[in-house]
Length: 285
Length: 295
Image: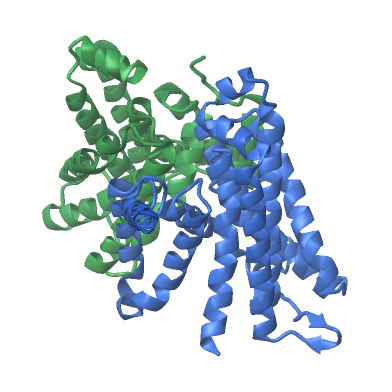
């Protein structure tokens, strides 16, 4: 029973980690809270579904979904977020909320308001024993999350791009002066960030066998709780915070039977932890 | 009359936009959970009058006081949790408060609460009475904003907004002023909540959800934060928008989201904020006018 809850928590934590990673990467460089990341999550799920229905290939589903959504991110940063960099943080925050509302409604108009089925054949078979029950889609989620995070870790820690990313995150102006192509870094940042959100959207679509226009609503705010808990802008902190929230939701919901709905648990955890560690679990200073 | 109903609803949001202006505009503290305090006021008033049978005239001020007390707690928290961390914490407070309304039986849980109409010398409140009440509340909020802007407190708050460290170095008790701003802003939101509850006659937790907070902040920002005219203008504009855009009701959210994006991209100081295109045009005309009358 405990093992089952633990695995549930890790699966949910993995989805949260991927969803929030995009927002963390964006915050790391731009210092803006980009709620529209949750829009990328829904967009990615729809593009993924369309790709899967036309090609039937799961690999292509992820590649096309992530790539197209990533390109949308590049477009958005160029036209919207970069020109706002010197404004108050309220400005970009409200713009991102507006864009998220706009995109959700656009998806509703184009694809229709009803729930669409996403029945993908998962290359992993389910494991069923007396005490344990592991869905094939869960294995897909854990494996994909691990792969994507490993690629990100390699990119950030072992390559020149990663060094440039860290330099830009620390001080954009100085990095520019030192010859880092900052525009390129910001664009790449959005390509990766929105791509990750799209991957999370596709995985949730497969997990629940459905996509719908408002599917980004709950991730939109939970993602914020996670990136803040992780210390804003710290990729490692984000993964830890995502697991903390995922496990807290399943364990508290499963054992204690919290009197509040599951989606409020993330924020209760957030508020309590922030009062003790006001700059998140992993803070920079 | 339908116009009066619209006017009361928009008026409540004028109060809300002016009250968030004290916290975000004057003291510069990000708040994305203002609807929580609007809701605390509404539910306090609803429970006191429907469950405990208190008169509206008792529960109305109490709604403001309870909201202000919770706001004081948030103010205390804001000394520790700051900037973007604070913004997200306020979103969290909004979600937790709504969840409590939705799950605790005292607050009607998912069924909502019905609220009795207030009476005034034995006479039931009509819509016109509500309009008078709302206008009174707007004037009171305006007066508070005005006092803040012109007082030592307002200057101190402006100092905090522009540069907290410098303000502290000049001997301004930053912490005290921040907490005062939170108390005042949430107190006014609580009063607005009480009026809303009694006017609507029925409230549900979803009335005070995160999207309502976004709407309130958007009104203040679209009009122009840190000014008095800005939040009033923004609340009138966004409040009347559903009436004006009725013909595009199916694409309402699309238009709303798109407008927010365009506004923030091209007029982030607000439509009538300081140094905005529109405000520059108005003030230039005025100075030209006064110059010509003088000459």
